[in-house]
Image (cartoon, rainbow, N blue to C red; front, side):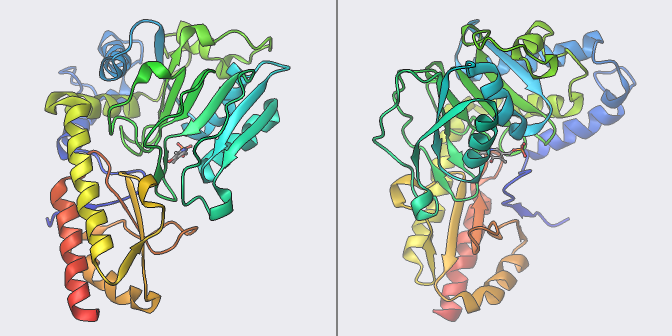
Length: 357
Ligand SMILES: *Cc1c(COP(=O)(O)O)cnc(C)c1O
């Protein structure tokens, strides 16, 4: 089998050893001679998975018991509703920064629940930069930001110093770089970009941020209900949680976030340097806001796309077609993508330049 270089934007690449362990668990989990897919989530063997999946997040983020970790279904999109539902007081206001499609969807849901104030936006330039230097209203219940904009390829290099609780959608760059997790009241991420397969969403929430809305809460939408149930108020997405745990164990074993951050920087530098050097390509966003996870680039001569496509497909590259909103190309450099794959792409770009520049 030829190795495929998988630049998929999401669901994204997972470590090969994780896929192997996961497939073994489908047949014989934890030496039970049963599949992980056919046992009770209340079994001792699975409770261990859930406990570890929750504690490893706190360990990697270096936070203590003031935080709780949940794994819920519904994707990051479900959190667009659960965040305001759990944090926005009935007469309060929520502040949002609009940096792309996902942030816009989060804003849309928040508006359904209460007063929502969009305090900064980069929509004026098609989300090709990160707004900076805006004032954060001190009387808002929280500020919601998106750390990495998967579709447009921008990333917050510096988080705002917020006088109010900070809530962050980290779906596409969670555990990719060092952050000060204690600066956040809520961090959430759909697992399928950078920490596991689709089907579960990780939410890390500061306990004392909850219970203040004055709202009567539906059980399934109430973080406190899920916390009380140990993330098992109802049947959790058992398999996606297990595979997320394996992925985080892989990260920890290899040296944790400090290790991966270095490699992610090397990967991003390698590709952006080639985009800037190569006469045929250009990047689509402000240089200082370039994402280390999703690298968006276009051809100066769009008519050469079919030729470029042929070359990268021959090199066993997969998943670099751009999102339909941006066009061109998007290479996603998630944690599990090796530097070697980026080198293959860069070599293809150089070969393409030789032929067509
Ligand atoms: C993919 C993505 C989402 C949506 O995730 P779902 O799990 O599909 O709901 C939200 N935010 C960001 C930043 C994303 O990249």
